[in-house]
Image 1 (cartoon, rainbow, N blue to C red):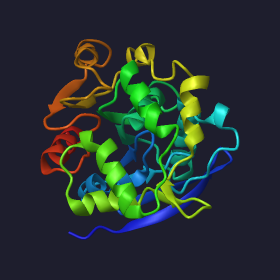
Image 2 (image 1 turned 180 degrees about the horizontal axis):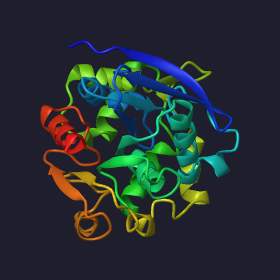
Image 3 (image 1 turned 180 degrees about the vertical axis):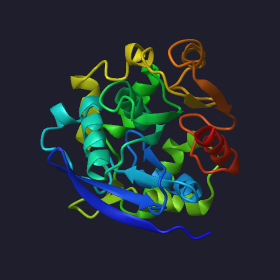
Image 4 (image 1 turned 60 degrees about the horizontal axis):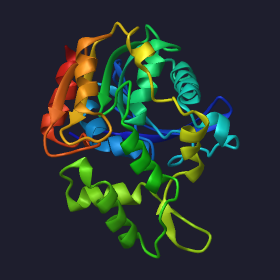
Length: 280
């Protein structure tokens, strides 16, 4: 079934935020938020699937994709400001209650929002390889490539780079790798191409060192939570996932075989897990 997608821009907290919208005719809403160095277009596959039943909103965080880069990176590239953006977005769109699906950073934004500014408005929370604590080694790995993004003469070379650093995503076909590349490429003044984000977004780790330590917020949640953990994830450790099962909202945790950080949300099995949980 064909699903219409629109590209949109809104002023949120004084910054222009870009988002795609799928299934606008539906009443129930899913906010689908991407990971740290990625864009909302990562959600295309699952958005197409969910849009048969839901209105799906996929934002680009500021500093990523087509959203504005922050003129105050040390202050605004942090979870607290991203939550403010999310609140402004849903308020302007007139969305009172909604489900939240977040990959990595997008999950952390949803967790913090559900515990604070958007408490009582997030109905169900899906965390894709995300939790109230992340492994230091994984943060160091991500900072290593995200803070100093590579640049290449051609888009084809950039695609090979993405295939290497995002190999843990799991099975992706050639067309999906090409789309991932083309939706996250920008050209530099010297003509080379590089990932489509502001390298300063890694200031989150220097100016907000404990941003991803969210156990106190986790323990206050009283909504259903589904956690999808990549079987080989180096970011959401198995011990952390076990704690998520046993405290706070007592998440349902499902391990996704054949991938690490983070599952791509592009297979019928992953679609079904999310769909069943949201519809429960």
